[in-house]
Amino acid sequence: MKTNDYVKYITQTVVQYIDQPRDERKKLRQEKKEQRAGFMYRWFGIVPFVFMLQMRERKKLKFKNETE
Image (cartoon, rainbow, N blue to C red; front, side, top):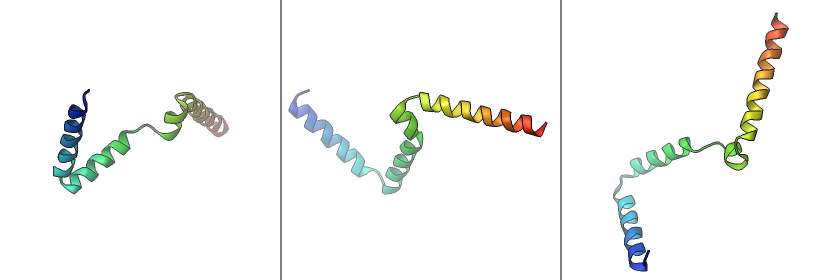
């Protein structure tokens, strides 16, 4: 990408951002935040997620066995 193309792209992006109403920008920012993966998943992948699921299952089984 040449410098001129890059400047044109950045200018278009900034103008598009400025033309949006403030409420719409906040709404889009909030939606992006909600869609982002959790901290543990982003930093360590799926391993902590699987570990947490197993721990939850064990708690459920333990609680179920105690109530019977």
